[in-house]
Length: 476
Ligand code: IMP
Image (cartoon, helix red, strand yellow):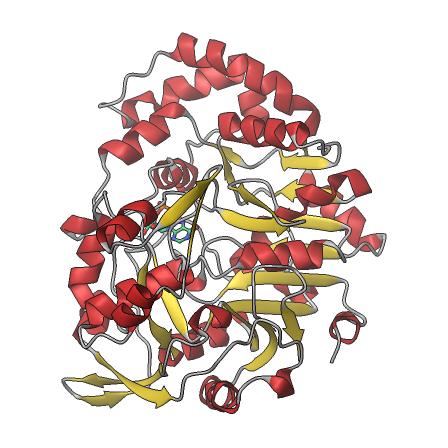
């Protein structure tokens, strides 16, 4: 089936992640932004980071929806009320877009989005519970403290940030909640004015705008952030972010009902998955050793290449190396699962877009995915499968061994998830799939695994991504 058929009769589409984030939402936001008139984000802040490849050029955004590259074509980009927005970061991203020769004329920021100020960031960093020491390992961007103020009913919304008297009075009320932060109200208010002036023309009642867009028949794309297993409602609490990044949370964050969504897509890394930050991850290769290692600094891509003797070159901010280097292949074939995971990380280039941290690696967990499909809906998009081309056999987990027997049920409880042993089914490895453009042409073992996954989760694979470029996409 072609993309036109998939989008036939669709007014609202959404892209959320069914795992722990970093599944390649950016590519699909970009893909569907071509179709949409309005692209909206509803949750999170600059803890997210998505990489979009446009005309061979890589761009990483933390706040702006991927559709911003189409702003000059008259598409609207919305930062919804469910988001937490750091004005400095937003202005910086706006400037970057302008410097790249694009426009931000149609950018809209919700008046009700909560604002991240320096003391939120300071608090997040001060309280930084490192992943290496068993903590959540936040991105340190002030996300948690800002959402805490929001649910504590003392947060500062964008329209309040714009008015210096309101801002000053609101900071005065919140100050006592940050006894360890230096809060000089006058200084904060003064320093915030240039940002307030820049943002003022873009701030509006985006909920109302969204209702108008829907009535006008405009096509809308909702762009999720993070992933279901990181949702404060549905994720592996307390190892989660502070927003509900499920399908429902994303819709709510832009002021619409999820019942309005005609095409809800859940992105799934396959046949491996990743996690950044601390918390249980049943299928992780290398277990707690990997969790600790990935939480320490000094293991960024460059360091890992150097320590494994793999030659690389620098291209601007990026690093180029042979992801099929014999040393990487040897690591992937290792008997030691930690080394195997490290090899897969190098093969797939799994390093955080926001923090540069190495991502923890494990085989795709169908038990967790069944849980995610129950909440985010059945339609799935598989990503990153091409990274394991020519890398040997692959595995998928369909069951956990527990102290009480076998279980095919996911639970968000840390004790449970840390105690289970994944039972994996092994599939024959596959060769190059980067040039495949139809589902039937994918290797048999891959299609078998997709069939098993669908049967087990009750979901349906609608698309498969076989490369970073927009056209490296199979629509089923
Ligand atoms: P926070 O969102 O910065 O508070 O971080 C809370 C947890 O969510 C940490 O484990 C982070 O690593 C994780 N996290 C936050 N944003 C992302 C993301 O975009 N991708 C993957 N993990 C994330």
